[in-house]
Image (tube, rainbow, N blue to C red; front, side, top):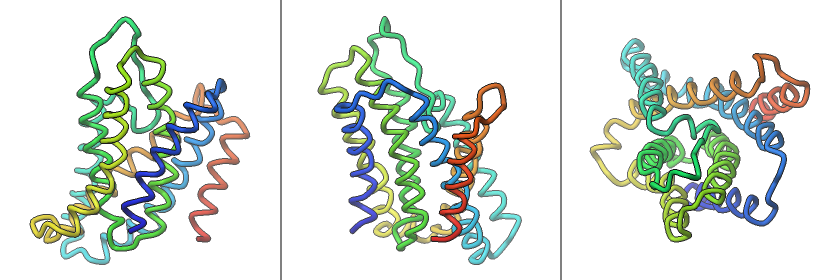
Length: 226
């Protein structure tokens, strides 16, 4: 049940934090995003990466799915403009609702739900830590726009249930369960691309400040010991 409820609550928490606290220092969110990137990368390598190869019948084919996941994420980012790792840009003069942004984020969040439906607590925690700062950045973007409240709530509601829907689909549709490990390999590629992009982009001028470095090292250490 927690793999349905917690991803939903992480989005609610991110939005609530922005709505009530109204953080004026984006660098604090960037540090949290750096922590999430380090933790997601570490949990993927420590837990999910070995599993997809353990159940692999062909190592090269598994590698192909991982690379394919990276390419899928690059394709999604063509429409989301990098919102999955903290980049959301929108002009107030543009009143058109970003449907492509929503669709790409929904697909990304839906695929995140696949590896957590069988009780992968470390991966679940990694996704939660990743989703909270992303939800905060999305909330900041949506609340600073001129979109209607109904549009904002629909956007966040659907985004918040996308990952639980992915978990539900992975456990209830045979066409997906038959290819569960291949899809997990695809998700590994997605996580690798997102997490490394967060780590590289979290530095300004390709230099890490001490706070970001500590947050990344702490995240990797936490992921190793849990």
